[in-house]
Image 1 (tube, rainbow, N blue to C red):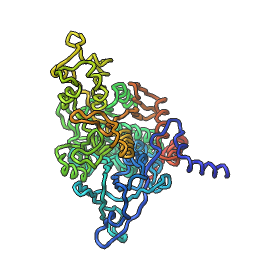
Image 2: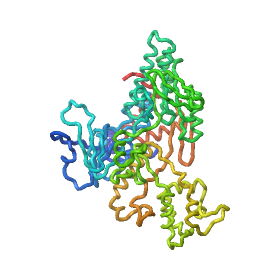
Image 3: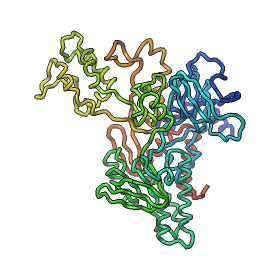
Image 4: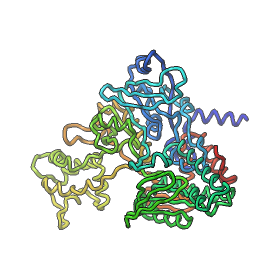
Length: 577
């Protein structure tokens, strides 16, 4: 007992202990919040009722990967931080497919906000509410609590800010397909996973009711996943394991009627992964009996059928189903769309930021994670300014030495240049100065310079909408705010080519650490840095190690690992709770 008491004190007093599991954890921090609000007659105006503070006010919308990472690294002694989120917990979303089938319990992957308050010195105010509208002109956000209306007090309030961080993630994208909202399940939130789990059990319970025909049983036990991306594929694999390892044992009379189908509009599933992984996944699904329909687009969904168009033939096919999970991509939340209209981005699909994560058209608002996309500036837009800045002697030509003086700033400001050099195997700067015959020129004029860099912008790629990107963006933005005053007086960023001086901060740079695709049967595929690909049972154990290490606390690590052990010993729970 004394040993346990000592261990408990040690874990609470030394946060670094939470990084010792298998691989170094990069997300051991979380949300830090303190709830306090005062109610006046009429509307709840939180800001007017708070004590006056000389600190800059930072309002954070959302407590997902981006918001959590930002709060974990921000120096809260320098800012008055306020957080608004409709959920009072952080969810480890990569394990949501495991929750749908009971491999991991829902409460094992969430860390309550209030549990983490004690782990940070200083104060962060938190309100469980949803943002309804952003007023960038008056620097104000309008929010509404989702807590029951029968409790005393008003639900609406507003917050003033000096800096706003939008980290609200995204919602499922239905592409305006008729019937999707009414008849399909999504897999974006913990509540979605819990609903799917209940529906799977409902389908089996309905299928064993006496008097049903074989066709009705097959329909009830036909599980369709629309979307062959990482989420859809992982859910299909989890569902297959759940059915064949657990449910067929307790529903033996209908085991021959179960079918899992993945519908993908592209030519292959997992098309964002290496081709070797995509091929491996398709072959494994074929062996497991999971049907994969590629080159098919869903036209509509009714209460009993999915209308699918086969692209190659133009044929329309009706597919009966018992449950449909829609996992085809992400869309922008309504209040973010309204904000986009206010800042002149109404024609865009997603909120655009610059390379420093500032919302374009609104300098004191930042956006991170799935709700935004970094709009990388093209080299060719600034090519004349770059040439003029590099041509120090105003000779109208650029020498190799002059270009060397600015190439480091160019690569930092325009990362696509570095990608271009690597892809073309250009080892030195002078290789850009070679003519059509391969000879190195001593000098180039503006036209030759444009020609040398004309293909660079083809290397530009959008960042994936993953937890990894959001987490890195949150940490980067926190570091920028922590060093705000220092970098204002002593800029650390690249040269400004269109004006004098330098940018205050280095632009955001994403470092890809790899990605996993669990494929069921204790097998997984991984795309690792350095163009490494790993597939099979050993990769599944690597997946266990990484995901356990990245849990936000020792509590969730223990619960998740315990759930995995429980599943191996006792199987998954089929209770409909």
